[in-house]
Length: 423
Image 1 (cartoon, rainbow, N blue to C red):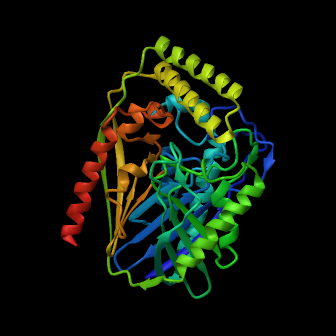
Image 2: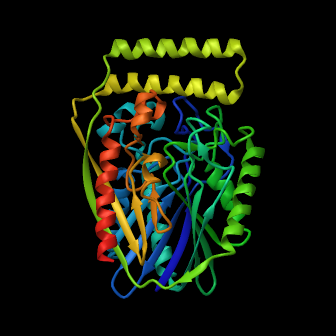
Image 3: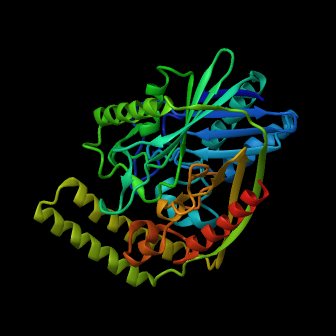
């Protein structure tokens, strides 16, 4: 197998806002640069490419542009996937908020900025072309293990987290890259931050580059996983501490890596239709916002610590999401969810276009079955039924009815079993 990898730095306009929190955040500078990274693998049958962006998310705006550029170039890539790391300190303007479920998220992701979309598309195309043109015979090694005290369940410390990490080391004659698949909202920097940053994956990449030429971070089922209960603060020094802690454990896991020979690689796309959530009456949603604001004031008077106060603030953000959904609802009854599945030897990777709860994927996840969130689109949260019962932010922000995420996972499970049987 031949393999190549490359990265391109994104050049953002001097005047732009940061995406990820429901607050106006004009960018005031750069903490660390954002990149788009590409891996290209070619065997005797086809060419596969993966493009990963240091952005909150991606959708058809960027994906269609890259596909069009590749078609114009004459480069035929039979299988192509896109993903994002989900930093909350990247740029706004990269997602379609005029159509579909992101209408209610315009305050978080911003209106489309064609110049920024073009920059992302151009740099993605350049990264793919460089990776393709510099590919050479290479080897892949895989290591599996657990990374602790980085990500944890963000709803409650008493609920299960997801410590699983999958590491893929790519080695060619002259270069090495490390792919890290780990579930965690990479949100150490707070809503008040106005410096552009890839957040935890960005500082982690600096650690990785001590031993590798490139770091590629894929986010797993992190809809209910974050650093909320593991971070000690929300500043640059904590970013540094957490990234060192993260990479130290990764280095330990890599001691047991095993080289693999790619005997087969299959790719499969299919769609699942999920019911759209019926919005609450606007007056009811607005009344709940007021109730949440009253709770915050009470929590401040009680002197709750920052972590507990953040949970109360999280409820307010969910209530505000309910109001936005009620205002933007256009009568849609179902959403089409694109699912991507890759089988590489015995390894199956399932790409989900949004924020999948680990509580949903854990029953299906094993040593050879892996989930990638923010893959080939962004349709917000795929929350479990319990989140709807508790009125969690993630469920209030989701465009889907209660129980629809479980339905999606049943259909994915059926496809996984079908592939396993064929294998």
